[in-house]
Length: 411
Image (cartoon, rainbow, N blue to C red; front, side, top):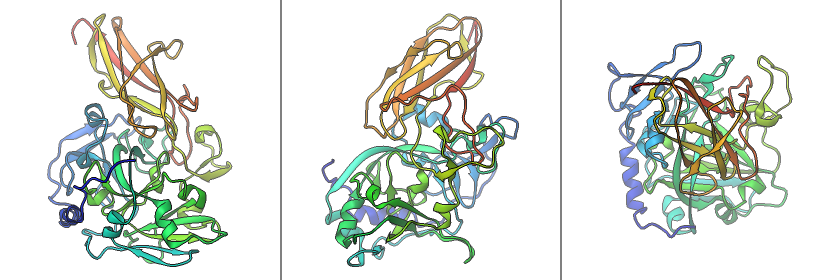
């Protein structure tokens, strides 16, 4: 729980709307520097761009709808991902290029005692504020690294970010509308629209019990500021510990349902195998499915690049980030022998169970090729598997990640 931050006032939110009002792209895409994401067996170079409003340097995966990836060095510099380098992912290209905060309304309707329309002023001043740090990670983060390859956005590791979110409990907002007995699901929609009428509007649902657990948040601030337009201004649903497909951006509509939600984005899209880590043998297409939900533990070395030269026998300090998925990080281990033996890394500040956790470890490598692997175990006792998982959607990458370096006489 956090005290209300007076800087997060109606004036600041209105300023956020103005900042978001100069178009999806603020400058043309001219010749851009490139970054190599190391995607196996396919073109892996992507342009770096600063062409999008309220965004610094980002990896451009797609222009419209915007798919912008966070460069890996950002994760090495910051445990809280800066707003201007926080990744962006939209499903439909018809995104509002500005939002008038003064006329914006959040509607709560459906299987409720009364339909409620709330202004941003209502949310800022009519409910108890809450705040926590949580990782927002695309379901398909690292999809471009799947072997065999799968269709979809070919992300590297940067389709994720960690932020301090401020807002109000979804439970409290639902309480103002009065959820009727027999409610089953709560469905969420945003201001974005499909380009054609027959395409399904992007909507996601949570069970009514999950929606009222006191942790699911309607956020109006991100790292102490109004969130960028492309990250969901003025409101975004925050579902800590779950993949970001549920974190509906530009949230404007909440519908309580008396039955299970069978819309396309719940019943057909984002389906994963009902197996640990959503893993099936490569090439499998027939399997029991369920909607993707809780995140799995992950860890990444962030201060070394693949193929980097280091000095043999000299102390080498590793730095990286770990996340427990739907709970906290218990430990991170490092191996230099393919997982035969492990050493504990030191953990940095704990910002809460849903946050990234910094880890560091000092080692020395003999001359030659060195392979450094990191493994996270969460507070539920779940560890990253040594083998990499696979499914046709390219979802929930979970296996341990390895960085190969070259140790020689001179770095």
